[in-house]
Every structure is written in structure tokens, then in C-alpha cells.
Image (cartoon, rainbow over all chains, first blue to last red; front, side, top):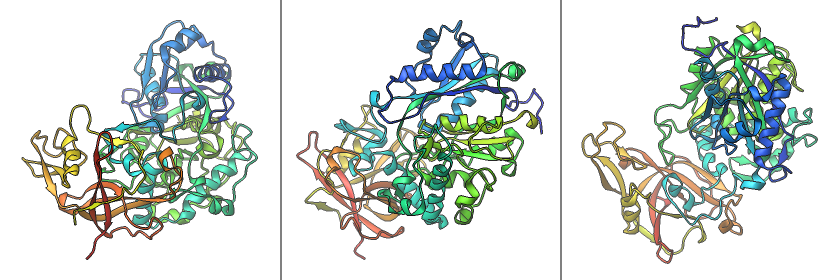
Length: 397
Length: 152
């Protein structure tokens, strides 16, 4: 299974040795400004690792992150800055790409200790889900916004509708994904929806945002920050916690997936048709080897597509596979979004999913799965570039 | 066909479409103002292309011609929007957006609104025809292409 180091691969060569997050808040509710949230999450990750923050020599993020690397390096007093990487576009589709880019910098010898992070204070900077104050618009949005296709639910509903039409996917499949996230959040005190359970009746009675999305098919909007620390595999044993190794990652999308407006040839897709095979190839494993999955829920329909594209079931099997029992820890067929994810833990643009994957490998999740050697993260679906990630225990190397 | 709409489907105040500063889509928006749907077609390999780009994605020719197309197609997908995400829509209620593919132009797709009762059933594959919606009073003025069920 292991690959020779002469091959071009991330497999087993980089370890996650620290994880940290701030308290998670409803959008606009953070008492701290965004940059301070970033600093808090990074320091928490260093503390988790037992690492002097001055040893960080690189920063990696995505989705037009505003907490900028040089300012972070100056604030933290890092002794030198060796890499500063931003993933280009794709919003939350970049949450795994940011990890991949950092890992690649380490494997290539550019940097030794890279923090990957995301910070968000929407009270300070405005919400993602509202559009106002725009008078004229050009480019892709010019073909959409004048028709009331403005916010993310409206931009993605037609894609999911088409997928449901092509493959006979029912509303209940999407509902099961929402129920699984809320189920897991009820045992996660970090979760914004902790103490707020969801059942099918409440899901069905919830208002439509844009058909086929009910309220509970849509992610929250939140404030907070989350960070992880990456080091070369040789140093993995020098820190407090059990390391989680990068087994593989893939970034991008298929043929002309960026053709606007809504003109990608493979429209009813989550953008993983090329990425899933690349990820499995690098990791040297297949879907049956994956113990637990964290799959970015901007909208539940995107998760249906993303899981199918990663080979966990065929699209035509979605209705049978996607049931609450199959998706919950500790022993469902495919435990999904075990912290509560974007729907119910915190919409940290998927970075809470990356942290949860590491917790599962360590055996520290509040919804710990029984088999925990291989954890997958699937970044934001239906965008380009998208990304995915596999992390594993030392036993997988 | 090629009807012009008296009243706009959605209330005023939504973002106004304009060409990019490099002029890439200017012929498209100018065409709509004149009740013409123009789509790029490669003069070299005849590939249709929408949205516009400077280069033919098929043969890499820069020689793309803006070609008039009958505004007719079929519904490729749709959504009914209930939750307003813009102040202009705050009091409006539900509305329908459709993604229409154009068989006469290489099956390129365009987003518009489906005219009529916003609570009506929508079936993928249904034939539709275009209706030009002019916003002459707007600054700057602009036009949209809306859709209604085809007569025959």
C-alpha cells in the first residue's frame, strides 16, 4: 500500500499534530474581530500540539481569507515566514486544498511547520447569504442576479434539482443528511445547534428557502476560527497527541466545470468526477477502506452528489443508502459529519470538518466511530476548484 | 414569439447587468435591448459558446461571431425561490427561475424567470420560448430574456 518516496505523492509524508478552534458563534455574535479569532484558533492548535507558535513558518488558507499571512507572522512573532499560500477561488471548495497546498510545501522542502486555518466574523464583514448594495453587476452574476438568482441557495438549487431528476433522488435522502448532522451535534457541546434536535416532522415543516431546499438543507452562517498544524512525518512523534497522517488529497474539477452561467457540460455534479479517483489513487485505498466521512454541506443535495462521486453508492442507490441509521456513529455503514458539520456544529467553511477528521483518527471525537484508521474530508461541492482529503492513523502507513 | 413584456417579472432594484470593462459580453446585452438573442459561434469550427469568452473552447480560434438565435428551448432545470435574499424582494413572495437549454445553439444554457403563476408545476424538458423584458427607465437601461411555456 505504501508508496516509495521517489513517487510524487503526499502519502504518509506530512502529519497533523495540532488542532484548535475558538468558541463557535451564530453569525455576527462573535465578541472578537476576525483577526483575533484567527490568532486564538492558531494558538489553540499550537497548545494542542505543545508547539511554540514562533516555530510556525507558513500559513495556508482559502476562500478569500482576510487574516493575512504576513500580519499573522508579525503578530505571532514567528521567526521566519517560509510559505504563504491561498487557494484560488471556489469558496469552501478549497478547505481541503488549503491542507494539500500546505502539505505540498512541506514535502517540497519549502517549509517545516505550516498552520492551515479559516477565520470568519460576519458581524464585522457582512453575511455570505445576503446580497445588497450592488447597483450594477458583470460577469457570471450578471446572467443570474437580475433574475433573482442571488444567494448561494438559489445558485445551487437548480443543480440539485437536475440531479434529483436524472437519478430519481427523493427529498428523504437529503433529509437523512440533515438529520445525521443534527443527531451528531446533540452530543457535541461545541456545536451551535447543541441542544436543538431535528426530526423528520420539523424538517418537513420547515420553510422552503429555494425548492428543493428546506431551511434544514442549508448550512448555517457563523463566526469563529479553526486551525491545524502540519509538520513533516519525521517530526510527527515530537508532539502531545497521536498524529494523523495525510494519505492523499486532490484539488480541481473536471472538463469545463467553470463554464458560466450554469454551462458546465457535466452540470448535475458535485465536481468530484476527476478528484475522487485521484484521491484514492494517491492514498492507495478505495471507498470500502474509509471508516468515516466529513462531507461539506453547503446544501444537503451537494452531499448526496459528493458521496456518490466518491463511490460510496451509485446515484440510483442514494434513496436506499442515505438513511439516518446508515449515517450515524458509532456503527452506521458510513458515519457522516460526526461533529454536526456545517449544518449543526459550525459553518467554518468546512474547516471544522478537517478538525473532526483528525479527532476521529485520534479517537477523540464526541461521536467516535469504532473503526478509525481512515477518515475522509470532502470540501465544498458543486464549485470549482473543489478539493478532498484523506487522513489516516500510523497503522495505515 | 419575440414578445416584449409590459411589466417586469421581478420588482425593480435588483442588480443591473452590464458588460465587463473589457467589453466581452457587450454584444449580448446590446442584442437583448433590440429583441435579439445573440450567442457566440466559432467562425472556424462552428462550435456554439455561452457564456462568452475570447477564445473558442473547442478549436482555440479567436474568431467568434455573435450569431442571432431564435429564443426557444426546453427547461433543463428549475427552482422556486421562497426566501428573499435582497431588499428588493422582501415583500415579493415566491418566484420561479429556470435553466433553459437551447437546441438551436448547441444546447447552451441560460437562466431566466418562468412567467406566469409562481406556484405552477414545472416539468423538466418542457418547451419554452423567450420574452424580452426591457428596463428602459433604469440607469443604465438594460433588457432581460424571460421564458414562457411554448404555445405548441
